[in-house]
Image 1 (cartoon, rainbow, N blue to C red):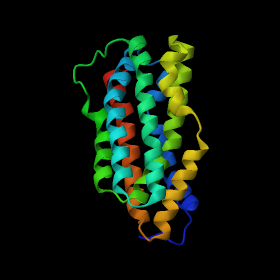
Image 2: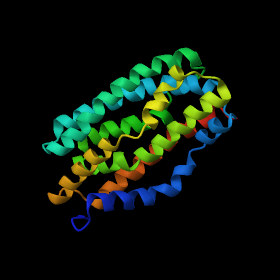
Image 3: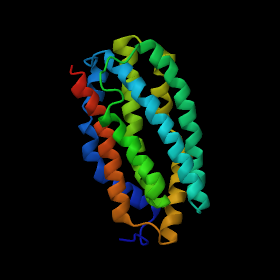
Image 4: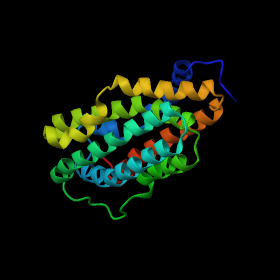
Length: 221
């Protein structure tokens, strides 16, 4: 249903509260943080992220090109260069981690997330996609921070190898302001359905958890 009576910040906070109980369903991050995950998992992450980052880069550009709302275009267009930077940081991780030992490459469970994002880039209303993406950013950032810390403490990876995760763990307040502006524009125009935004956000979270937990199942501690 339309959510014109809520501000962007209120709606975003409400959806994040609804998602929060499932954030701890990520079974891989605690294993890395404690040093219990097998080292091979880092090679798998690097290999899968090469596919994901390239796909997400294109999805952000597609969203920016498709929307007629300037603030949404600024939000999506501003995120695209970050994916390009992140892709470059994967080289050091891949070199340090070695070859991916998996047999199903790429893994369907890991690639469900970018496939869904690509679908949204073609079909989703800009403000609804913006809120779904940003509602999951905080959890993604916490995951990356915990992984980078575990890599250094337990696995001996250097700063270059950890740079991909450090990049996404960094807090960038400007991105939040751009997201809120895009969401508010959708609310003001009556083009944001809160139920649809919640559905998108929940699916984003589910597919991201599928990424991490697919690797746990393949590389049990």
